[in-house]
Amino acid sequence: MAEYKHSVSLDIEKCKGCTNCLKRCPTEAIRIRNGHAVINSSRCIDCGECIRVCPYKAKKAICDKFESIKDFKYKIALPAPTLYGQFDGLDDIDFVLQGLLDLGFDDVYEVARAAELVSGYTRRYLNNPNIKKPVISSACPVIVRLISLRFPFLCDNVMPLLPPMEIAGMLAKQQVMEKNPEFKESDIATCFISPCPAKVSYVKNGFSGKKSYVDCVVSMSDTYFALLGVMKKERPLLPVSRSGMIGIGWASTGGESSAIFNDKYLAADGIENVMRVLDEIDNGTFPGLEFIELNACNGGCVGGTMAVENPYIAKARLQTLKRYLPVSQNWTRKRIGEDDKYIPDNFLMSCGLEYLPVSQLAEDTNEAIRKMADIQRVREQLPSLDCGSCGAPTCQAFAYDVIKGEAIEAECIVKMRERLNELLKAEREKINKEPSENDSK
Amino acid sequence: MSEAIKFHFDVDGENFTSAGEASVQIKQKLRQLGFAPDIIRRVSISMYEGEINMVIHAGGGIADVTVHPEQITIVLEDHGPGIADIELAMQEGFSTAPDTVRSLGFGAGMGLPNMKRYTDEMHIESELGKGTKLTMTVNVNR
Image 1 (cartoon, each protein chain N blue to C red):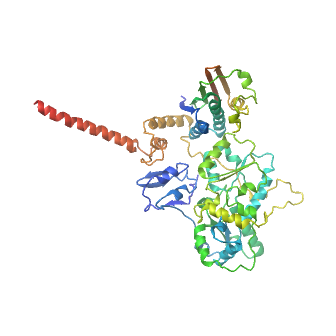
Image 2 (tube, rainbow over the protein chains, first blue to last red):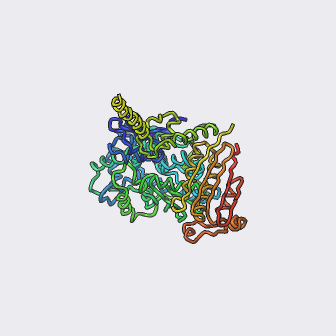
Image 3 (cartoon, helix red, strand yellow):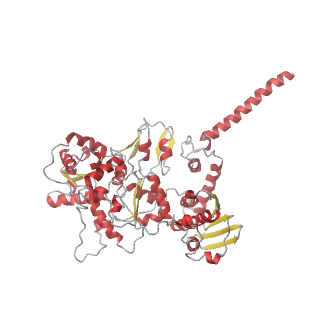
C-alpha cells in the first residue's frame, strides 16, 4: 500500500513539543518525539484540528501556489461556494468571479454548480431500493477517510458519487474542449480554491483509483488577499454566476441535506460530534434515516482551516447572498426512457470504499490477543493521568506504544518521579542512620 | 493454543447519557484485534442493547467480555428487579420501559430480540428482586 500523502505539515523550528495538538487529535495520530510533534500518516485524516489548536503556528496546510499552473494554455478557477462568504458587503457573486478572471484565470467554473448536479443525482441514488441506508455523503474527504479507517461496517453506506470539486473539474475541462477543439486535456489546468486542507490530500492521492480532475489546489486565504487587490467596485458587465440556493447552501452544514427534498436526514458537524454520530449509526440507532451529511469542520466547509472569516459570519453572509437566487440553476434533466435512478458513470467513483485496518495489532488473532494482554499489563502500572508528558496522548496510547516498541516504560514522568522519590528516601535513610551509628561509637 | 483476553466494564446506572460507552470501547478493542466488520457489529450491537437495558431497568451493572479467536462471550450481570416472564420479555414489541426513556426512542421492545438475533447463543438467568445474568456468545467462523 502506497503511503498516504498529507497536506498537514510541521515546521520543526516553531514546534515546541507542547501537548496541545497531541491531546486534540481525534485519531491519536500524533506523538511527541525528540521534542517535537510527529504525525503518523497512516492514521491522520487531515481534519486540521492540530492546525487550529497549535499556539505557535507550527502546523500548516501545504497547498499549491498559482504559479504552479502558469505554463498551462488554459487555466480554470474552481471556487468553492465558501469563498463567496468571505467578503464583507458583497451583494453579487459576479464581483468575485470577475476578480478571479482579473487574477489571470481564463475561465471560472463554480463548484456550487457541480454541487447542484450532485444533489440531483443524490436524489436519484436514494430512489434505489437495493442500497444500504442511511446513505452517508461522500463530499467531506475527512469523513470518507475516517470511515475507511474506523467504521468498516459503514463503508458500503458511503454514497458512490464523486464530490462536487471533482465533478466541477471534469465538467469545466469538458466545456472548454467543446468550445475550443484545439485544446487537449493536457493544455488545461483546473485550480480549486479551497477552504480545506483535506482536499489537497485528496487531489494528491487520487481517490478510489481515479486520478483527480483537479490539477492544483490553492488556499482560500491566499486567494482572498489576492482578490482584495483586484476586485472592483463597478458591477461586471456580464452576469456569470450560475449558482442557485442549493449550490451556495453546500458551504455550510445542512445545505447538502436540505437539497435531497426529504426530511429523513441528519446533518452533523465538528469531528468529535461526527464520530459520536457514526458510532450510533454503527449500532443501528436511527433506523428510519435516509441520508446523513457529516462535516469534519464546525459549521461545515465555511469552518475550514484555510477560510479567512469566522464560519458563522460566513454562513450569515451566504444566507443573504442566496436569498433571491433560484433554488437551483443546474438540473439533472431526465431524458426520455431514462429511469429515475440513472447516474452517468463519470459521476461515480470507480470502486467502493475499502476498509484499512490501521489499528489492528497483528494479522493473527492469537498474537493480537497476546499483544493486547501485554498492553493491559503495562496500562495497569501507569498513573491514569493522561498528562501527555511521555509524548503519547493517553496512558492507554502510551501502553500501546510500549508494546509496539516505539516507547519505553521509563519515559513515564510520573513513574520516574516515583522512582526518584524512592531513591531519595533510601538516601535519606542512609544519611539518618550514619550519624546515629557514629554516635554509638 | 488459543489465547483469551478479558475486558471488564462497570455500567453506570446513574448516568443515562453515558449509556452505550462500553459498547463503543469493545468495538475499538475488537478492531485492534482484527476481527471482521460483521463480527464487530454483532458484538457491539448486542452489547449496546444489553447495556441500555441494564441502565433503564436495573440501575446499571457489570459487563464482562471474553475474547477468544474463535468465540466472543459477553456476560451482563445486574442486581435489578429481575425479569418476571422471560418468554414474554423475548417477544418483539413487549416492553416495560418507563415513558421517560421512550421519549428518547428506547423502549420499543426490541432489545432482547435483537440480542438473540445478533448472537449465536443467548442465555438468561433471572430471579425476581435479585437480578439478571445474561450470557451471549458470538462464534467467529473463519
